[in-house]
Image 1 (cartoon, rainbow, N blue to C red):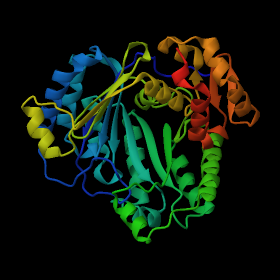
Image 2: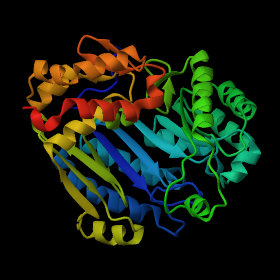
Image 3: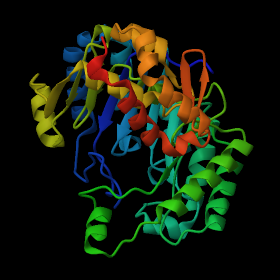
Image 4: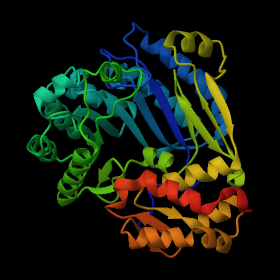
Length: 398
């Protein structure tokens, strides 16, 4: 199995910027079209990092600016956040990612973000077909996205390209045309997602009213295989269900999430996660979602969460297992057993027969104590995880 780009004790820092020019109809992230003060929001972020970073051991290996639309944030405010994060333990060689909407950027702005300390951009192109972009409610067209990718690459930063496919009435030829344009730009990384209907979104309301009909599951599966094959042929290996990159160019921050590692989330609606020693449980929380309420609270040093929960041992183990079968590095059963204080032979005795069946079905491969999804297994990752959970019988272990 390939070596993961992050270590088990690597910690991520996530900064949420909740402001947008326009709310996309499919988006269920905490994003708002509101007036705001860039530097006042940065003040709140710095205060929260100051007060909460000590809970994460005083070191961070990655930093990610998500949203919302962080490319709307003044680069000088972003520079303040990065400089402060470095004083609070951000590794000097950290991957520092900023999400960018193509309709909000230009070459000089990308350079200013790089001068601020950003070294990776995640550009939300979503499609390179103008009609599809209209359906998705985007504020840019395909040519604008292409110019944004080209401009971002000129800075020397790594560039990830986000795509959304499996729209109603979209054909395989439509997807190929979009991929042709995307691949011609030679991004360093591609995230490709099927269009998902989320409750509470504008798209979700259309679905409830019967005015939006998603693509059939079987047709979506065909498109997933089409996209994966095209990207693989171009050198982008699938390393997570929706993520593709050449070896060594995987997104380190997102890999912290997928490996079940700790991360501190600051900003309106940001989430945090901290596993307990020995995987005996975990702590999860989410900040208050309202940007205005978050701002007033954070500036006053009030960091009460919007929600928080203590995850029990069995749930923490279950989450680690479910995540492990969604990435190419797979699930290291020996590490899982050691982290949780379990006896590996007992774990294998419980799960071994199901693992053998999944291998025989062509869904998993095994190398020593590591099990990982095959190309076909990625299509059924959640089902594989559920079958393994049923086999392990966590209540009977340890």
